[in-house]
Length: 301
Image 1: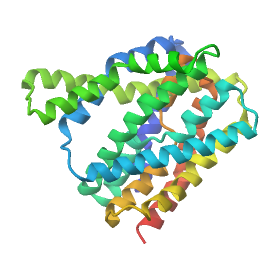
Image 2: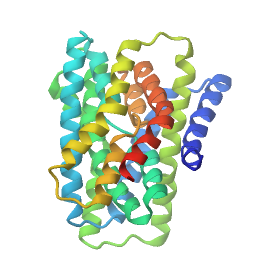
Image 3: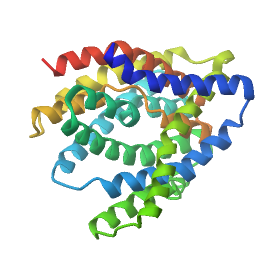
């Protein structure tokens, strides 16, 4: 029941977006564009600016990269085996590779293990954000435009302001540049708005796809990879990394999170099967109500 109380706010935001779209019919792409280009860069800047770098970053970064590569290969093979189109394959990568480590995973590890685990969770969220906002955007871009080349999609990635905001945050931290309190308050206000807006966009998209057809065979495969295979792979990867038991538990929990809500925003922005991505995010989020307690039981015993 206490775990449900952590998940409930996320589901509540989904619901508000769903109801709002049903009754008010927003222009979803415009809202998602604002979140991607105006709100998210400030969230990235604040994350890198306020979280101190230390040696733990190296192990968490290695874990994030290895898990992403392994999941990517598995999803790519499955998509090829199922003869998915270019757009469908990109959508499967978005949903299967990237997890909701931020606004879902971090609260769960805080509830389960306390402040030290929360700090680990935030670091993992940072690296996952880098991967999702580079590799994720790349595949969203190349999947949405069937005529796009690898070079075209890479240029779109380079134009994303979030990457530069993250780099700026690191520079400010390493050079001990202190922002004026009044300016930092403004950064906080915009950054705090990013995650709720992204979640609202997901709810809106779910309302739109209510009467559309979704390729359930792709949803099923990706959901299995995200909710079952991903945490199992995490356990295997951590056998080879010299990290403490608490960090292992945090990373396994993070790997077991449902599909990231941001992937819906990317799919909307670039037209990469947003219905498929949104429905997978909804399904994996609902499945997490049952799978996350199982994972918690495993890592706590």
